[in-house]
Image (tube, rainbow, N blue to C red; front, side, top):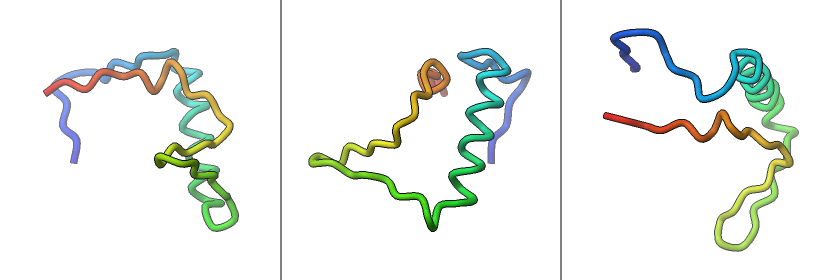
Length: 60
């Protein structure tokens, strides 16, 4: 699980995060019909840009 001593810092606005979460939820719900193109080298192309939400720094 995930444990945090305080509020979660988002690397983007709350509205952007909520849009990203809704997009992930929709894609997860439709995963059986959603096709992801995998290119040489294992690069996956979804056609969506998640920046800056995906630039979160992981610290331990």
